[in-house]
Length: 242
Image: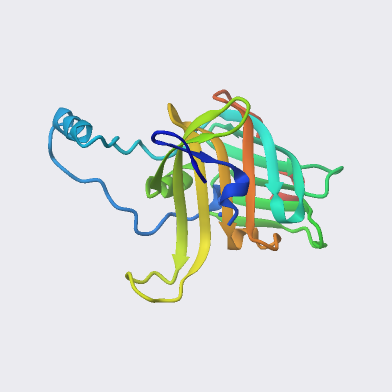
């Protein structure tokens, strides 16, 4: 990751190989530093300007309604497939690949439940629909509230995207600073538009939620992201028995 211009770093998927994720399913981050203080806003802004330090922007927040298209990238398997991410009335759905691709799965937040259904993955022969109840859009956004701000960056694409880079994650065990063995259960690097924290351009997922991937990391890269209702459809296989 190198500098492109003052205050902006250039990020590409290859530069950060290494998590909700989702990302979308990433649990809340532990240990984020709270912002405190009672000074008037204009005084705080003046102090930041005097120190030539930009104030921390608000953390990512997935909107209730959106739709976007892009790519799902698994570098170590050398697989890139089409990807869609849509939201409607607080429910949302990710879909990567399809019947004609080596990877095909869908993740949903639907009626206060998180669903994952993998139709196709190299070496995977079982295809259950997993359910985690008690998970909704508010749960996800609460996790984002504890995200750590990495800094402003420029994604080298066409067109280039000016973004704010955030890190979310959970590490086990939860111990104080020191020489302790730690395991990253779920980590995510999230890149949202610098002018709109609800516009997601790129996400790196790393951790136990990527168990099918030998390197435990996967990327989603959006080409479009619109703030209008999308389509969310619960697969029949995930419907509760009647």
